[in-house]
Length: 78
Ligand SMILES: [Zn+2]
Image (cartoon, rainbow, N blue to C red; front, side):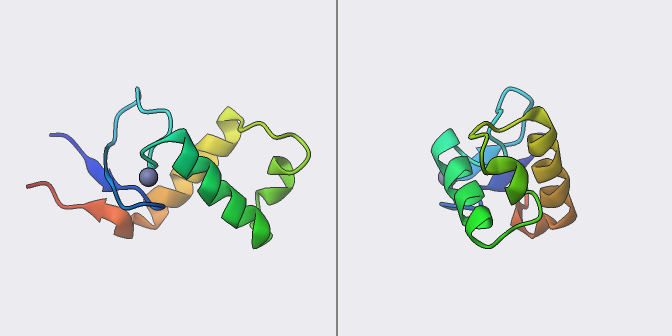
């Protein structure tokens, strides 16, 4: 079964697979846009974003965990 999610930024359908390093986003662009919005809202992980300009594995894991906890974006398989 292939799990698909809707990109939180542009709502485009994204296949959830390890090769897709930008999941749940469709692209790096959407990921960065979303991270930027979080930073603006003083999101809890924004401090590690600011100043470095690099998205670490740890941050991606945190994003993924958060996403899975708020799985309202998941799209039901056809
Ligand atoms: Zn997108």
